[in-house]
Each structure stands twice: as structure tokens, then as C-alpha cells.
Image (tube, rainbow, N blue to C red; front, side, top):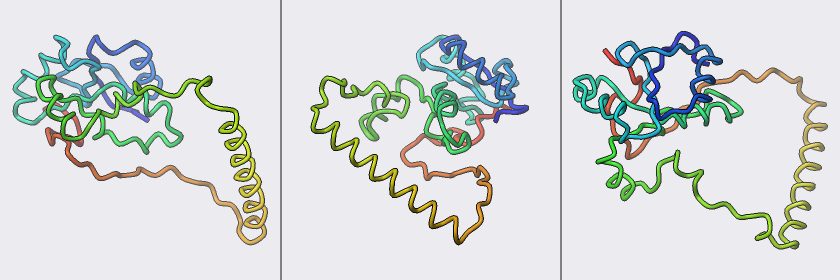
Length: 177
């Protein structure tokens, strides 16, 4: 996935994400040579140095939240995760951005999810029945489709999503010059 790409990692990024980067063909480098800059904390001293650098000020650098790598690792189609959603703005801008767009994508996993004891038995039964019906329908559909069409392999394609209300600080590449 990241074959030949160089990434810089703030010390706020855990080792598992760094290992994933390397396992997917990426190389770890210093910030000046990196194609991608990753951090988990906009107020961390390492990240602050990037924000105060001339490259960042002149729109030649973008810091991405390292949760992007986690999202890629968990995605069925690795190329379907939009990098632009993971721009990590400086801490001084985050409150204003949250007010305009809501929570950042990396914060959405922190939203409380219902605990199993909060689900009532009728809901569970209804969910099981609907999933069984959906599974039966898919089986029937695939059987009827097989009669008329031959299967062709699905090739992963890069999916593009429109980005709205994001900073435009070198949003696409994250390259340092």
C-alpha cells in the first residue's frame, strides 16, 4: 500500500502504527525527507516544530492524524480511505473547526457505543431475523446471477470523496519540499 513512501512519525504515534506502515512497504524517515507526516497530538512538541516550520507556513507540509493508518488497516479496500479526512490542524484551530464541522473523524470512535446489556431481547430477535432474511436474499440473488453472468475478479480502485470544510494546507500530498 505504501510501497516506496517515506513517513515521519511524531513520538505520540504508537509503535503498532509505525510497524503497519513498514509492513505495507513504507519507510520511516526524518521530517524533511518524508512524503507523509503523522502525529496523534497537535500539541506535542514534535508536531509543534512542524507547525512552526517554514515548510508548513508556506503550505509545503501537512500533518495527518496517524489514525489514518488504523483506518486503512481496518478497511476492506485499503485505497478507499480518504487521506484528506485525516488532516491534523494545529491545536489552536481545532476548537473553531469542531464548531463548524463537528468532531474529527479520529474522534468518532470515542463516541459511546451501546453496551450489550442495553439492547433489549426484542431488538436482538429483530436484528437476527432481518440479517437471516438478508442472507437468504443474497444467496438467492447470487444463484440467479450465476446463471446469467460469469464472475470477473474485482480490482481495487481508488475512491475519491469530496472534501468539505477542511484546511487546504497542501491537503493532497503531504510532501515536504
